[in-house]
View 1 (tube, one colour):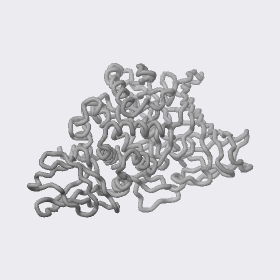
View 2 (view 1 turned 120 degrees about the vertical axis):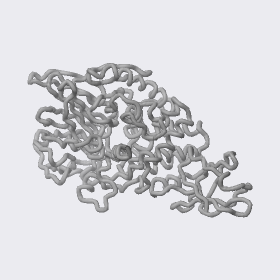
View 3 (view 1 turned 90 degrees about the vertical axis):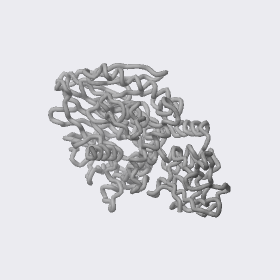
View 4 (view 1 turned 30 degrees about the vertical axis):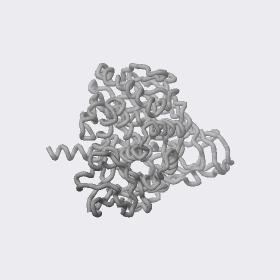
Length: 543
């Protein structure tokens, strides 16, 4: 039993760290810098991608092109475009001529005959082909999943977050730059369907045994969210207010899906109320059944939770509350607000995606089962926190921080809500945050400054302690005459976060600092002081 539990916990933590390809390395390489830094060769804005691709499942082979429309941000003699080195470059065409290029690791340096002037808007077509990397265990590692459904039909999925979208198509593979729109013309064997991001804009038989399915987004989109899903899909649809809900599932799972996906409307009602409207109404919302667990692919969320409640039928919080809803539907859809709409500039700040999205699980719980259940769920998440490495990673080298960005990030947000001590103000601030930074690319300082404004308490030391240090604050008490003294033990100078405790059953807000303060109440003993640990993620001790 312990072995089974240990294996399950390992899989959970692996999923939470699934995109941490270059996390916490002792030594970074040139390849890390080429991927993670904004070099002069990347001084352009990727405006549009138009992928035209043929996918051959039997050969596990893809070939086609990407038309990259861009605008230069400065004079540009050489452009860096990213494509994994195992993929073939057939040609790179600009104004009808083949451009010269050289490759270094997963970067392609394209040389223009004459340097492009600043503020030039133009496009090139990058032709490529090859056998993309196969995922050994998606989504924990990046790559293609080539498999078959129960009826023997090809079933193809892709998951590349962290590993890089350049695993399968050429692009500017850095989170700081999102194309304003993407079109995907994906040809697949007749009898199969491809489902991608945005709206379907066309379908045509090519006469060579393949059918081309065309999809287009009209909103900015993360590179790793651009996706193909190929199967013998069955489609059904629904509606929530002005939002279309489309579902693509394997035929033999149709009835189960119709029942399971009813939860989407409850989720949307909750998220609209607490976080604001869905950020990509123009592109619609989709759940697409995939041969791997799930991923937040924008407007085409990957679903592989096998129509179970919880996380494949288990509860990540250990409270039982997580078995009341479908983890993949709620978590991955929460990313539409946090990660897809609001995006971290550098993956070192990926807690902006994962901490907030993990918190949406508690938001949904609160909508359906009340605040007390949500607080218990968040507290239950703490059993998965390691506190061994910092949440924020190293900048400029494609390095995420610790997988604690999920559960510790969620508990940080819950602690900040408790510091606010005003639920109306908290929800107003959260809605304002999602509206202010809708379709924006931001960093941690932006988040800190935003949530710091509505209240008098300075939250910057709080963010600093939880994001940039491993241990959590410790509230210490010691006997001081007929009462007790208290203080914080923390790494951040001037750490003075308020905290709620119960003294003889009555809730009291304390304002500790790093120096001892005397409690202005008589206390009968240690047992009469209890931490409000549902609302604050801290340790407490008596000296």
